[in-house]
Amino acid sequence: MALTIAGSDSGGGAGIQADLHTFAAHRVHGTSVVTAITAQNTRGVTAAESVGVDLVRAQLDAVLGDFSVVAVKTGMLGGEALLALVAQYGEAGRLPNLVVDPVMVTTTGDSLFSGDPAAYLARLGPLATVLTPNLIEARQLLGREITTVDDMREAARALATYGPRAVLVKGGHREEAASGPAPSGGLHEDALASGGHREHGGTRGSDEPGGARSGRGETGGAPRSSGEAASAAGDSGSAIDVLWCDGQMLELAAPRVATRNDHGTGCTLASAIAARLALGHPLPQAVSGAKAYVTEALRAAADWRLGLGPGPVDHHHAHLRLAAIAEAARRELRRCPECVRPAGVAGIRWASGLRASPRPRVASVAGTRRAPGLRASPRQRDAERSVSAQPDHGGGRSSPVAMAGRSGATGRRRTSPDAIAGRGPLRRNRQAATVAVVFRSAAWFSGTRRRLGPSGPPDSTLTAGSDTAAPLTIRTVRADRSRFTLNHCKETA
Ligand SMILES: Nc1ncnc2c1ncn2[C@@H]1O[C@H](COP(=O)(O)OP(=O)(O)O)[C@@H](O)[C@H]1O
Ligand SMILES: Cc1ncc(COP(=O)(O)OP(=O)(O)O)c(N)n1
Image (cartoon, rainbow, N blue to C red; front, side, top):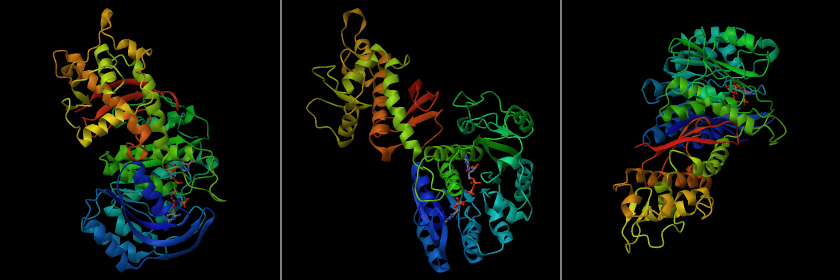
């Protein structure tokens, strides 16, 4: 559960609308406190009015008095009155995991904060888990020019003295020409999400398991120091942010997406960080994962034409990607050496209702069982429906799976109840239920978008939820957007 305290963008690309999209894309329930109403579209802000302090307080009390909010993002606060109000709630310890996006001016040049920038630092600085100014905001907060990555590092360090645990200085507005050599050797955001960001000074900055893996345009290998990386790369094509966190300086670099649709990227990034904190990600991973999410959102919306100016990003890009992964998983599972074993396949076929057994005696899908003649519980019906709804299950009689489903030379199928339930003498039959759940998970991803899991990096471990069985871990290695290789799948609980 997350909370956004922000203004409304009538164009739907930034502000509270972007935040709620982002929470939803992460499958985090989003609550909201509206601080201002703006009349805004892709070309700019034509009017803005703050919501009164009493009404904002009432919203805060309504949300915080009922929901267990785990992370909070603040965006447009409009002026010092609401800044002070929000600070009071923070000081009272009611705004956990606070991501402060110090919104002051839009990319189109419209001012969204009437107060003294110094008040931002004084009131919310000490309360913030992470402060996320863009270059313009960092300049206003510190009263100095910021153009190079070195400037950004200095700014992050200086802002950190006001008390936040972390400062992310965003480089989306940095002029390529002014930026000097980009320290990314094409490091892809997948690597960022998997911990492949660079630590200034050359030692490894990775804080997620797995390290760098091969992926689109990714260098792989150990992260490099900024200097090393700079010399290995061209001087364009990177969107570099600088993160000061717990006394460490990190650079987060992603490919710069060629698009005019970058409205609301700051809001999206901050709320993705909050969503990931709400999901329990450690801070550096939450930030690098959020950046990866924004890069993909920019990429997915690059061709959109919504409005005449800079349009919004695609907050829900991950849904399409997971659907594609599910589709590919169904194909690849047929070849998974760990999971597709003869007994397991018999189990899949049986559990999936794929005509494997003419007389099933016990219905068992993903760990649920029922005796013959007994009515299925709603959960069992749901599980059975989900599995049997798979159109491309690979279980046709002539498919590789169907062939593997025969036991040895006899071709006899193993369909005993114990075997299916994974409790019998054949230990390997445990795989039967497992694989069945994998298929069911695929149905989840492709069939019901609302039930998609959190985006996660594409090169990742997906945890597939299930109503009826222990979650599964599906580890994937992805070569590119469309190709998918199933590495391993196993029951996690
Ligand atoms: N064209 C782009 N390609 C890739 N990343 C970008 C691009 N534009 C902005 N970003 C990233 O989006 C995030 C928001 O940055 P920025 O645009 O600077 O913030 P804001 O929207 O608050 O002005 C940052 O992580 C930044 O690096
Ligand atoms: C209501 C509202 N809040 C914040 C912003 C600024 O959004 P941001 O993500 O910084 O992106 P740009 O609008 O600057 O592109 C906003 N526009 N409206």
